[in-house]
Image 1 (cartoon, protein in one colour):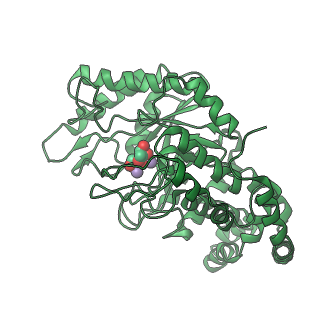
Image 2 (cartoon, rainbow, N blue to C red; image 1 turned 180 degrees about the vertical axis):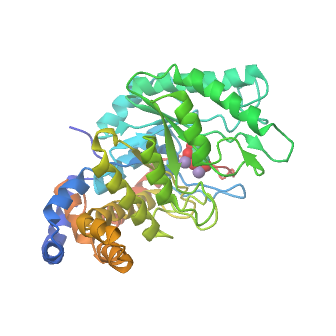
Length: 430
Ligand code: LRH
Ligand code: MN
Ligand code: MN
């Protein structure tokens, strides 16, 4: 049995104290939902199968290019990050796998890392490559690009790195490689907008050809940053073109923060699904740009509308529906464990709201052009307080009724502050 970080007795006594109120609240919700023809128990079973990956880098305290404010007890290496992700999984029960980033999480012994994760009750999700910054031991610089660099030896170096990520991912039990590159231009005229895309396709094809048969290559687009004039894979259109060119194992990944403000992301979901290219998500929220704020903290309604499209996509074509879900956030001022727990619940809530939408009613209202009825169908679903359902799903799966309260009570961070070495305050992405 896995060696879980938080004492089971603590969780059990916490849940016992919450049980009565929780069941009372759930019964109330169940009665309300049944009046709209929805079976709460069925929804609860479905919600229990939602799986979100946690990012190793999200377990550490994030920073901006201005500063990072380290926190006593924050994890500073992959082993400690795994421990913290295990706490999130133990209490929240919907984050069973960790998504590593290389070379940040580099290890000479992936088999040992896999065992260490398994002992904590965790597996590995998509591996992320990094050719958006230079490493000290690297021969050629990515200053002017990586997979799209004008010089072949630099492109080759970036391709090699991705191949190494696939290798390590195989040993960890991953099934996908996520590729995000910062390549692009900061000045008009700096680079050929068409040739740089051609070079991307050429490099990506070489990575694609090394993918194991049961793997996906997830192409992550981003509007801007670090390239502030044009980015090679800036939008879902460029991503889709590339995924179509590469082949069936290449799919598009939507990071919610990688769009211009007010872009209709739920429509992008529908389009990528229509093309059979809905590969995965990086969940976060944003106010201005790629803010990497906690999921659902700014616009939970948008998250609901995205899940509404996902539920429709799955119903249309369940055989090919397998998007990889990951939380991609930068926790600059909160305890990352608390943010991950809160975000995982916000994502599960959006999914639950989408599941309780009466689909027949919605379709009928759409066909009849009854605009207000269609909107009210969504609104009714969104207005339900689904927290008792989420809490009971967690408790039934061995997690905590109130994960953040229990986490605070466990004294985890204070204990780690005694044991772990202090993190550095160097500004940067992690
Ligand atoms: C890029 C990004 C991408 C990276 C992560 C650290 O902005 O979203 O997914 O791998 O941040
Ligand atoms: Mn991302
Ligand atoms: Mn991002």
